[in-house]
Length: 179
Image (cartoon, rainbow, N blue to C red; front, side):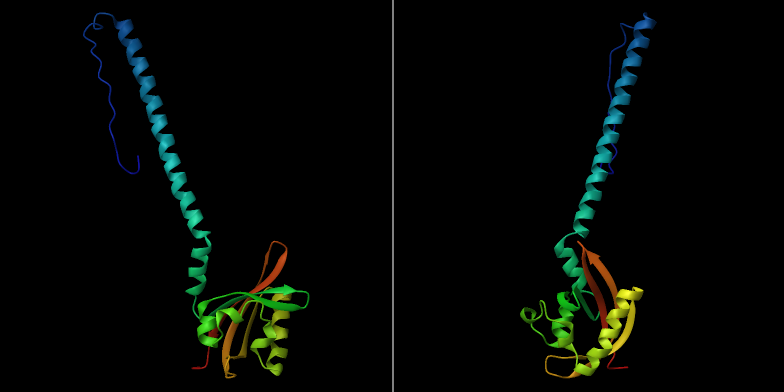
């Protein structure tokens, strides 16, 4: 059990049974049956322990805390926009979004995509977003606006995503200014 081996035994005084082979054989058969039941019982306990470990792993990987840590440790920017009609609203982002682009958390929820680009750059963004929903993927380069107004070049890779009949697109963006 739990990767530890145990020995279970039963000791029976058979000195009175030595002369009665039939009784001895019956005792041995009964003991064999008890031994098999014990082995089956401990096998089931081991299976339950393994199931519990697997369930804990599944629960761990499906927690909001784990998902937030995972998203916050991605390189570059990560964000998800919900598509509502022809508009897109920011719903999820990682800490780099606030650090690299200078926006405080409280300003980001439901911010529209066009608010992070100049007007001319957003025209290119619309083409890329449309490509995400028609081909299932887009790789593009855009200048993204820092809160200060500075434009930063990013390489973006985006994918569509659906949850509970809502459409989203998720994006990973890498700062390519050093390139």
